[in-house]
Length: 354
Image (cartoon, rainbow, N blue to C red; front, side):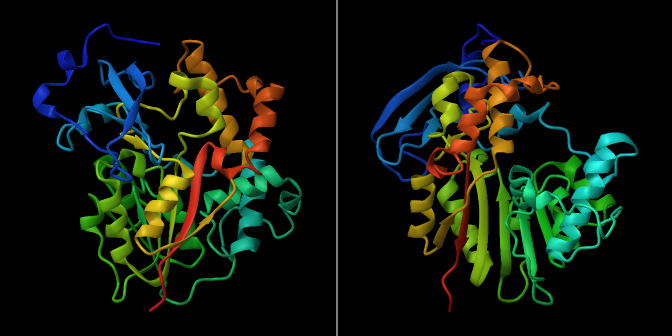
């Protein structure tokens, strides 16, 4: 649904646009038009229309032209609000009950000490596989065993530190970087080591980080291969990189097309496929494992995309009755066995040993 009849040049000065002549992921020149006239149908602050192409080689989708690195900040004027609500326990009702159940299971599973909790609560979670896989994904597939003493973890694009809070509770020495100054201030109030900026602001320990995570960041990056190379350099030998990103070859994209929630033009500059992103990582020397995605995350994308298709506001509270639609439920379950068509790519890449 278009919210502006103006052209991109009316709102994004030509000096603040740059041409993209080759695929940001594989460098191939061949491409096919994918969408024309995409609008910012999520936050409505990047007026105009955007063109998207698909690489004929790795099948990634990318914008051309795209905002320059210096001007892209304008597209985030009303982006997701970062706050510390995720660190506060609900005070009553079903949400508080579920919060205690989750904490209790996490404490046993990852040797944490989250509060509030009870030693006998949460026993049922392993039997509800979608919820269990959702919680494992929230922990970014960190191993159950406690990390070695002094193990360091960097979260790139950490926001206000929701994941860092959990990783620290699991025994990791944590650090984060983020470009959102408000998010950084919230993280500081939580006594988290978070720096304002990108990879250049990270301060790795001697030998490098044991683990680097980045959740839904690479699609926002102008030069993703250079960015991946930078994280490879920051890891110690045998260190791991956990990365999650939208998948342009997902069932949701093929179902919803231009209304797919994860297109998010112009903030999502380039969206990879599983094979394409895996190839990038392997070319840098990583050994890569593909993780399965929980159906809960897939269903959230379907509900938001359905709302966009109907011309609604996907950032507002959603009608979760849509989750009961058999078509969406079956697709969410099916992607568990077809990770190449999952809504999100989830990869664990291990740097070569010394």
